[in-house]
Length: 302
Image (cartoon, rainbow, N blue to C red; front, side, top):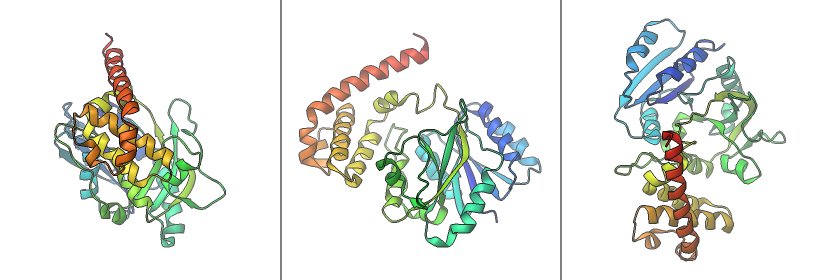
């Protein structure tokens, strides 16, 4: 059995997925499985993928189709189908340096018995080939994800998790007519018990797309307010200081107002701070709705 599963949520990205596939074919270590989770694509990607499966690539390709439900539901399906020791998500518009799998496997073999939940490594931007945000600490062996961000870190990082640990955490919740819940939900829960081994090497190259979720975050706020409100409640529970809790409360109020949830104060784990945050939360709601419309008009060329 392979050590690592590289899983890729896919939704109408067959053209960029070809680049992901080519990068996996070039890997110096083939100690991995590639799991493609098709989140209800309408561009019929399986016609191409099934031809890749027939080829002797040196690694197994698995394809799973599901109804469209958003990135978090694709992760849920991936975790249900992974049986390797480690797993890492590489999005369908991203790709891996030729030695990425080897770096991951070598790092893990040296540190697998130290109780880590996995590995935290670097993402590079496709446009610059430089690290996204800030590099990882060089003065220590491990960190939690939130520990990194709370100590001045920023920018996307690549997370390689032990499959047994990721499966022990609850699945991402699903809200009717919504397709977004922050992936950090599971990562926060794991942070409470485990640290990640630091690997200050690039294992993924990220190519942000104009129609990607990061680019269109304001529209995500408006379209998925219940999912965002859920995440803000989780942030309140796990925040390390009052400033972070207040920020989470403001966003929680904003998302709750967009969702037209009349019971948001009662449902908040920080009721007093939530009440105090109502004026700023209302203002944020107005800003989010306005920017969402502006983002839509920009993408549509209106």
